[in-house]
Image (cartoon, rainbow, N blue to C red; front, side, top):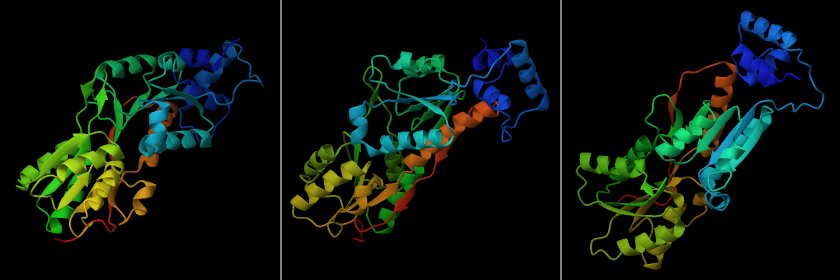
Length: 329
């Protein structure tokens, strides 16, 4: 018995577009010639609709670079995936989910109509995923290959906004607390926030700035801040590359008997729910992770339904959320 994919292969268009043509979807933008060709092929192949056929013809693959356990500890990537899945549910799109740590992750994603890869991956891994599905988008990772669609946060502009705010408050000795991430065979991934911090401080001749890196966790934020507090000349402000790091740093500062923001101002990154409930409430950068997931799913779905083959490189703006953890010197 002929299937939707048989018709799609013969017509040279996506299975999702074929399904919508056969179901007379008025929202589909397709030429009369293409519609006529699909209907003729369906008749030639004697295609028959099945009452038992899954209505979710389009299958969206979601590959998360974290393990399931790690994802539960990192609300950023969890929100990205939730954004994708809510979009899919709203548009009756089937979901095939896999974590890179799964032994059968590649096999699980075979035959998906679109693939969203969340997180950081090596060049070797990227090309392996492209072999699975050409209709692919990478979220939260810039890929230099212009033939690959990517959607990332505008980290550079976000860091510049944070540092502009701190320097306007009179801060010149600013510390950076960040994390290290690895891809493939323990290849260190270039951290955009760190690079933006270095570029900004060099450009503005802020020569007393310090850089510490460990992991993107509350524990590492606490440990890095403890080490930083051993310096004779303390920073007047701290920029943390994640809220989790900022939370740990805040505890270390307060345990030292210092005041936030009177002694040390601090800015986080992500605007997690907890950031509004710390004491004092944390000034942070809002990174719309959920919206990134929605945009990524929409890019895949639209590219399929509209037969768009041109790749896209896009950045999502982040916003500085001013609360109580920063003050003038």
